Length: 334
Ligand code: TRP
Image 1 (tube, rainbow, N blue to C red):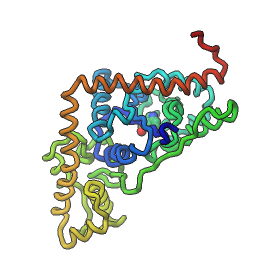
Image 2: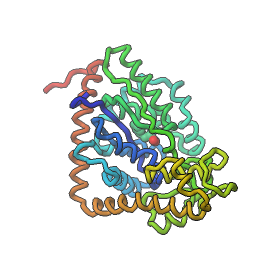
Image 3: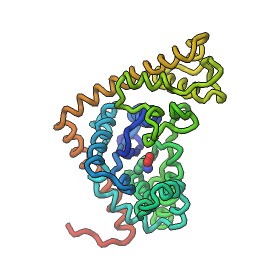
Image 4: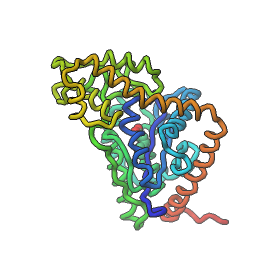
């Protein structure tokens, strides 16, 4: 507890192009709740190398993501925004936690199973211990809450198990974190296959809206979005395509599904799809403009990167020294 506020940690990987789904489902949510917490938002580049990356590309995407955090509305004076690889505590604590995590636990992780099936030629130890690094991210800052998507819940449960296990042996060292699940409706599906989540790695680019798509592209993708056969704008499970578009419209305009149904009563899919496209443009265009401004200001971004990494290092050293002492590492000579 700092300044009477609880601590919040979250992170995103800088792989693939961020989509509208990442924005509405995660980033926007971070911005909305950030004032209520002492926050740490990391660009988790160390997690990214568990699958092979092009170095120049990874570096570029990491900077883009960090800049997007700020463009989305996270003030870097109030929120600690930094690269995971710039703060040595993550790797140091991950090693220690590796020694408190069982092979059996890690073998059960569904993300590990999925990713090792997808990258069968590179099932490396980092992919296996990925959740331990994630636990280190969270426990280093004594985070009380962690906003995560459903797909990361299993990793968060493991983080809690590791924290509890460690505390049972050594006393109260770690805060046991809680998941913060955003409100329903924020889960955005593919525009082409509404049964699938909108994804950075979708092979069909028409299924996803990328945060950097220009207005014409956005409108065109919405015009092509898959709809249903009832020919009316009604929010129901039988119309997954329309339901998804209504969710997107509501998330961008702040309207409810009922209000949206009423607004488009008697109108066709064409009108509705155009309106959704325009609502999305009105959210993304200002974000893109802020991003362009920030990207042009190299010194400012560099200052954020340096200053916030130092701040993060300071906070995590407190936890790290305590943990090192508990497990029996010799005291540092000052
Ligand atoms: N594994 C998360 C993902 O892919 C990213 C992540 C890494 C994370 N460390 C974290 C999320 C700590 C929350 C807290 O989405």
